[in-house]
Image 1 (spheres, rainbow, N blue to C red):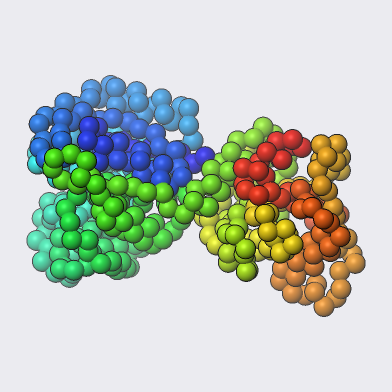
Image 2 (cartoon, one colour; image 1 turned 90 degrees about the vertical axis):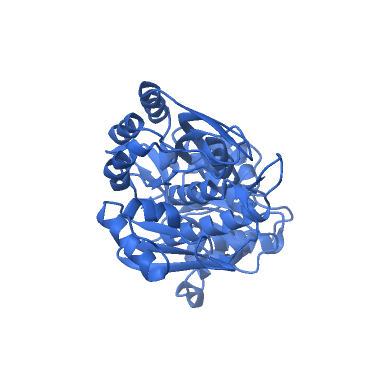
Length: 434
């Protein structure tokens, strides 16, 4: 399971703040951890009071989280005062993971979420920490002192924020144009535009959903542009799905995105946590895939663009999940699914005779193919060997295989493939044999 940390204030309406972030993380299939910086008393229609958490408790929360969990990315939201800002900076300044800074100055219900005397500390300490900062237009104006009336102004503001130390900036343009929401990303001194149709309704929490979704996506290894696009889409959808649960503003609602991605991401996290699993990572590394029902080609099959790699005695996913991301394991599942449609997931592990013996002892359906017998016409085509081999391995089977292996060929590493109906099914089988 991928872990992400939100450092923010508590919102009892659960539309924004820590509560909103945790719901967004959950919807995107990552595990949300939290450090509370302030307690607010607010409803969907009115803001009452703020009580900051002591800097010592903020520091203790951050340290306890990092002592127990491996964190993939951090989101910073409401920080409220100078002492809290300084503590956050001191605790995070040496991190090498993405930090998403969401400038939270004012609540949609009217409350002040950053003290005026803390703004200079925000600019001095937190802006340079940010891998990406996500202001809307009023927030960008406050940070830069530039009045933003058009897109040239927005570009100037983004460049100025970059000169203040932020590595990348996305200015959310929901306050500028009629009919559309256009976000401006400055990445590596280049500008990118992301536009969607505006949802004609006010809601509480959409901005927090944007930054939390961006954070979760970066933790998964997605590119910045992919992450901004996802954040925009999820924020927009949350406003469309907003519910009037109180007497005031409708609360933006997060709903799970791609269920397959969520299930596979969780399974990859659990695979990486299995005891001694690093011993089962082959030289070519590992991929784990999950197919849509009745796949037509590998672009119906979700897999890592990179691999699950071994680093010492640890196993970590490198790369993001993408349909068509895995050619070899994806093709293996594709071929098995042609004969046995219930099989939709698979993983490759290092070849070992004792692993195969354990599988046979557990009454797994085990079959194999011989790469040395592959016809010359298929050897030169990318992915053809796997298709040919798996097709031959299952040709005489009446029930779907749990395992297919081959013993390699000249310059080709031997391999074991484990199959299942779902990633969870694959993990259950692995737990019996590794």
